[in-house]
Image (cartoon, rainbow, N blue to C red; front, side, top):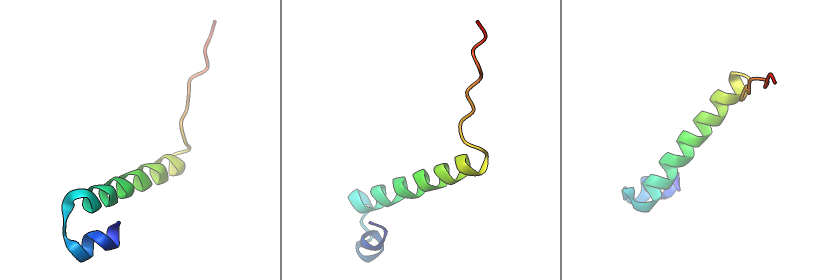
Length: 44
């Protein structure tokens, strides 16, 4: 979708899909780099 966005310069839908993909990739890389999700242990 990134290539399609650069070719057509249309925001809908190619730009939106490409933007969401970039955000998701960045978020996943951030979570992996910081050690993933840390759930506190339940003390009961």
